[in-house]
Image 1: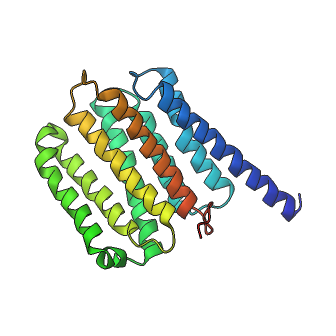
Image 2: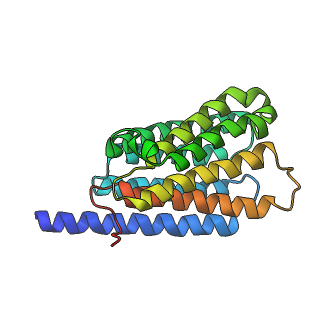
Length: 230
């Protein structure tokens, strides 16, 4: 196989995995995200982030982004099941994914310069983190400290994403990921299981989450963004 043929092959793999991941993500949003645990739900939910990770792996995406996507896939599988233990496994998986994204964004932006240059946005992120002590922490029982650590991590991810150099898609993706985590926390700790908002919340949550992860990969996963903006 020549170099040109290998490049073409890897690009075709990237496209194929991205399409498979997006189709699976739409399928999950339409038919599974608001339903109870099942083998089919777990299977479909495991596909999108795993496919995004394989797309990155096939075309030499940044290792931190690939790692974050694989960890997110593990978190997806865990959260598709009921119980405290799967929830804790999922929380750890996503927390580690956020750590990798923080490291990646920090390297791209050169620290927290963006947060300092955008004090209003940075202040909003910090205010959001502090506000969880009022509307979230008191309702988390034994999960209070794990949830606090998670809130700290997602807030740091938002702060490090504020000054991604010319990568608006990745910035949007990072805050979409934060928004999905916020909706999930409301669902788990503040919303009744019988609430009529459970189904729409699940659809919006998944759409922000899967779309956000895709946007981070497309915007900051490769040395050249998947989509270029003028």
